[in-house]
Image (cartoon, rainbow, N blue to C red; front, side, top):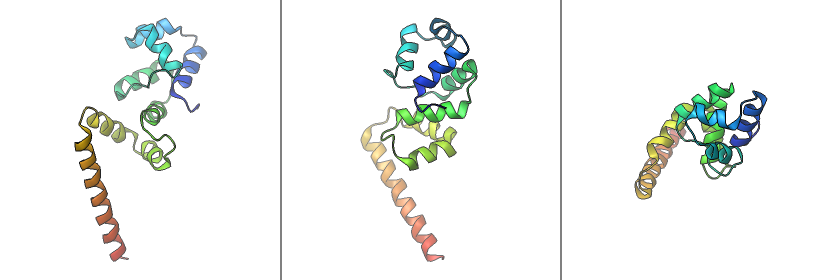
Length: 130
């Protein structure tokens, strides 16, 4: 599978001989939105239900499309640990992204610090039990 969400969508659409307009109608999108996504000018959708519907229409693996969408929505894209997390826990990762969307940055930073403290505590406990 290609590494770019839009390229994957476009290639699958063309291989099934679905016109952009048809895909737009099936998804409830505008023609320009389909074009922008396929050409990488618009980020992939964040709603997992939408991605699953798109995958079904284009006969693509849902989880692979979810991972591609998440990869493009998260910075930095080159973070292997982040990508491994999405590959292994795609459903919960997408849920987490949806739940964090719209929260203020300070609150998210406090959550991250809490997770980091918890992780550090767990690592120390595991080190002491060895």
